[in-house]
Length: 160
Image 1 (cartoon, rainbow, N blue to C red):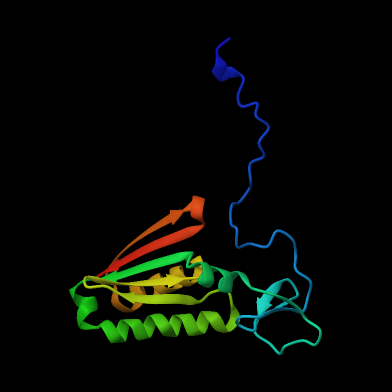
Image 2 (cartoon, helix red, strand yellow; image 1 turned 135 degrees about the horizontal axis):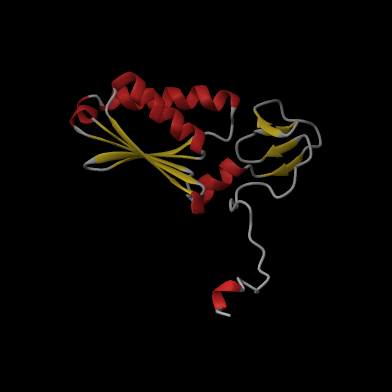
């Protein structure tokens, strides 16, 4: 028999999902993020009052920000973008404010101005998709989207 018919025998366990920012076990209720003040309650992170005697940790979004490891990258470029720069970035920040109100793990990490484009990085892929949808709805333009499964990341390029 050839070697290919036996398959792997090294007994290495394969992870279902490789996301180092996802909790391996459920956190107890009333866990407080020491960086942003979000509270883990009923299985999700929410904005709320600081509970008494709360367990303290750093939430996944704050860890991503500290590590400078975004889950979403949006490149904004083109002549139309250059002419409407402030207006478009205002839209991007409004989308973030709306999303962040109900989902504390979805935040803009940074807005980096480069000579030929602007790069917006986010802590979650949902915010990046929401920004892409808002840009397409408001201004049309061309968008390309790439998902990087190995990094649990999305890359969006919007041009007009």
